[in-house]
Amino acid sequence: MNRQLAAITGIEAYVPEYRLTNIELEKLVDTNDEWIISRTGIKERRIQKEPGKAVSDMAAIVVKKLLQKTNTSPDEIELLICCTVTGDMVFPDTGNIICDKVGIKNAFAFDINAACSGFLFGLTTGSKFIEAGTHKKVIVIGADKMSSIIDYTDRATCIIFGDGCGAVLLEPSTNGYGIVDSVLRGDGSGREYLHMKAGGSLKPASLETVMNKEHFVYQEGKAVFKSAVNGMVDTVSKVMERNHLTKNDIDWLVPHQANIRIINSVADGLDFDKSKVMINIEKYGNTTAGTLPLCLAEWEPKLKKGDKIILTTFGGGFTWGATYLTWAY
Ligand code: COA
Image 1 (tube, rainbow, N blue to C red):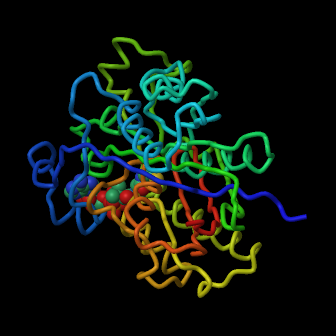
Image 2: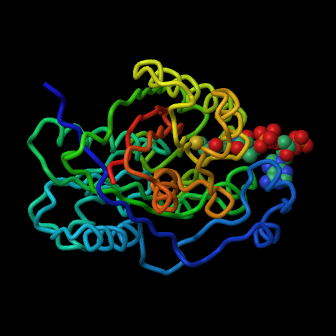
């Protein structure tokens, strides 16, 4: 008997209005437009500036649009997964806050913290509830307000990250297309290179941690770069091999948008034609869990039913992986 697949039946995305350009960053740190573009491919990022607004506010905008677009009532949603490292609060989960803000009352919700791999881990998790036959409508959100944990005096990190959010509706596939397979990985020893030092149970917030700027992203860029390329090439290769796919079978590669040089190295490592690679890093920078749904939403008008798509990510943890899906509409 064929397995019941989960399919993406709708997608929406949102980025805040404010554009933080390279020229503006030149005024904050010792950097320049040419260096940022040549080393990262980023021209600008969006920043959620309004006081009192958080990840749940971006997500609420997206979820409301998604429900409307897919003709779904909030009451029909049974599970909502919010993938983020910048949730509104340490607890409760931001997923619960989003449900409250959009009127979802018959669901359970939780967050997934897998940094830049969050959306991929969430997509796989959400799809399993559909495959098991217990849930029929699941929302998976990838959202981050990276500006809330970035030190705008640290030129090694402030040039990279931005804020953004995207979400998909998952339903049982009715045409055989959907989320087919994932190869997901983690290696906690990578935490040394990418983390936030304080604010957790290891080092609770104190005057000292604030003074030492320990509530911001700490990153050793070179180590992350190498692991990211190797991790994405390896998991994409594995998922292709497992599903008997060659590069010519794939219509779209959707890589995490961390750095244009990482994206190019992954495409070269897989010998993929660049015209099949979704890239929008120049507009948004690295929005962590937001990058994959932001790409899919932008390319949605070009996608055709049956298109073979591979999503791949790498992020803090380390966490990484690749998912193979066929577009269902
Ligand atoms: N502007 C100008 N110069 C900068 C700079 C900036 N914003 N940031 C670093 N530099 C300088 C460094 O001080 C160094 O100078 P030196 O040679 O005099 O010492 C030089 O540029 C090279 O720095 P380096 O850190 O080796 O640059 P890089 O080519 O590795 O690029 C990153 C830095 C952060 C852009 C890159 O390592 C990267 O993108 N890593 C992956 C990050 C990532 O994807 N993180 C998200 C996880 S998914």
